[in-house]
Length: 366
Ligand code: SF4
Ligand code: SF4
Image (tube, rainbow, N blue to C red; front, side, top):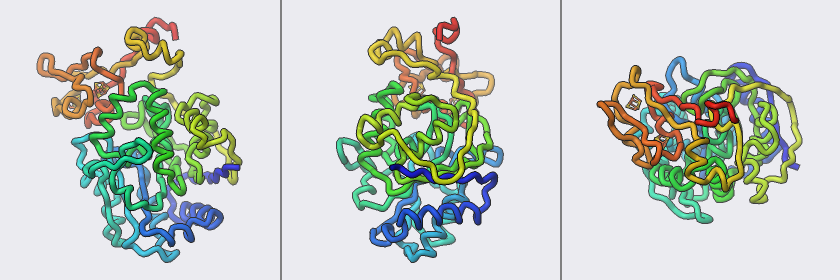
């Protein structure tokens, strides 16, 4: 049976977080396993630079620090501990993100290394192009964040592994796997290729609405952990009011025999209602959803708000499809080329890109 451990914690209190993670790591023999491996990779979700009023975008530094201190206390040498991530867009400055998210300070204080997966070449494993850092076969501790997500509904532990791909591969996969179902199928394949040893989701302070980058803060007050990322994500999805089968990456985990659909909870149950993203409130048979005409009717395309746009052109430079052009001096989304990956929404530093309701949503057919 897949065990999911969970504890209600309402604030980033290092003692409480550390006690919970230590209990799980002891029960699951994590320290002994990690000590036998040449390196231990901590993979937080560092989507973008957190700001003072926006510290709910990334895995909180206190969670990362708690894991680091526990590993050190349990005789894992600092030279073998690495913190790594690759934020989604090609032009994101990982040095700044590491710094602002507190990772640089943790790495400096404990003499650890930081690694930026965005800039490394890829290596192919089970048909998936992963950062070649994975060739060293690290022991992976997946440190995800609980947030809503416009494409996958939630981003949790399974989705967090997308950050292990170099930037160029991420952009290319966004083009190739451009429906919710195909992208979630890809996420399951990535999980299979990576197989993290243990997964933790920081849901103490989370994001609702148009996550993963443009949503609003939500106090959820939960931290949860499991060997099986699909079981962990399934528990959180169930607790946040998602119906069985609604999280398509969990469905693909079951299809790929990575999860049997069942888990047993050890610890605290919780329930929470999250404001959902303004798209993907419905599903249609794939054949229909994949047709160009149906996609046009179903898709919530990004809309640039000229009033707040500062013309930095970050959206334009990172769009994987070249779907953003200039119109009267402002960026403009060409729907024919847009695959609704929402990378532009994520990357806009001024929250000037919203999602427009699809035609069917507007006429209240769905
Ligand atoms: S990233 Fe945002 S602010 Fe910059 S050009 Fe695009 S819409 Fe405007
Ligand atoms: S316009 Fe935005 S949502 Fe559309 S393909 Fe480009 S980055 Fe993705």
